[in-house]
Image 1 (cartoon, helix red, strand yellow):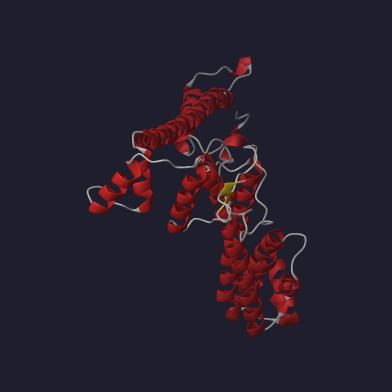
Image 2 (cartoon, helix red, strand yellow):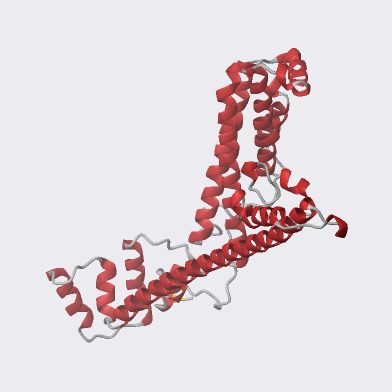
Length: 358
């Protein structure tokens, strides 16, 4: 609330664009309408010098009353803006939940349709026999014809299907399906809490590396117009102390220092972590003193840093993709090569040499 006329001249209640400090809701002279009206009404009121009042005391009283109303109006506008933001967030969340529900319903419809099929029909789909073709009809007739089959024979057929489909026979989930016929182990699983945290960390690292590359590319663009050497640093210090003496080249030097040592360097340190490679450690040291180097040397340092950042991007993108797909801990993945221990019991295998299910 305004306390004196000095607040009026300081721009109380005006928006930052007009020099005020009263916030960003209801700013400008429009946000001071009640204050100005109160000021005018106070000036027009009669006054009694013997009672200690004059035109200016009346004006101040009117101005303070109007300023209180303006402040209340601004608070109401801010509250309304917050409510609108909450409503927009709630609507967005409702839309997301509706979309997720729709996807779940579609998946259930597909699962229900598959359950209505005979096992032989599902096998025909897996083998690629299209409905209505003679190959599919022949397969169904031969499969549905009554015959004695042992469990090992069924497992052998599933192994042939897995080979034709290009499935990984070394995958414990595939081995369990071949041996038992249960497809539960083949269903995709939600990432664990640890895997989800690793995915978020990898995504954050990719974003930080992209920001670092953006800053380094900006530094490369202004480097040719930026002076190098100790004299350039002295001129930069003088220009910083006396801005009127700062030339465009010195401004470029200040911007270059901010982009490299103030932003890109810190971002790369966070990306490389506490145990960087020898090449990464070398680039970090070179970036610290790159501002004082000639342009051709700077360009080489920036290019090396961008190359290392791109490698980190590729590594973390691959890690996030494998974690989302559940292949990170499988042989050939980026993890330890050991599949996570599951609570689904022991994995059974089919031995094609002996025909036994182990």
